[in-house]
Length: 251
Image (cartoon, rainbow, N blue to C red):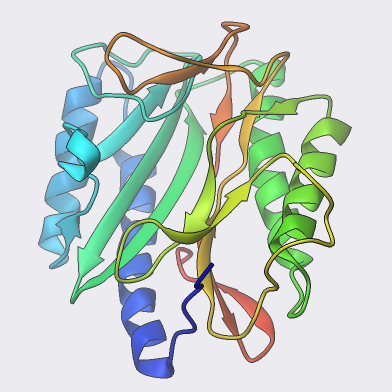
């Protein structure tokens, strides 16, 4: 497994790509309103990314038809924008990527549409809190499987389960690079590659309520849990700089 170690010039470019992700997610959160269609949200995100001089890296990636993954309610990841309108009480996952000057950024949030239930607030909080908990506990020299174990333990401790078969990943000159970073542990945590200075990767807790078994809808993209319940997803691009985890997709 060859995990790239980035030099300062590369890290600076990844920071630019990540900052555009962060600005776009903030822009969408501030401007999405009840009654907008998922396609309108996608178009708004694409236009904003392009206005900042970047390309929406998801559009056409592996054949994905849009710039923003709009994962509504039970859809955990890879939701395809449609003419469905968001309604009061929905929760909406927004996942997007950017490319600028040959380098990529990637990030995601799950947001409330208007007022939501306490149950849904807790669900969203689990994915967000798991992400920040993992980032805060990253240390140079720990293994990626130890990071995975932290994520899984946190999610299970909140009474939820991680989505299986999908994972975080490295990022750089390609949108997906080594290593894979699942939210559930297979094997022992003291196995596999170690985290080193210069590495850049995406951590993305995908949280389900009762079952982590994924089901892919007929659109070939939208991933839900077999339990059919709402789910949540958060993601940051993280760089290891001077022995610290630095979030590149945060304003």
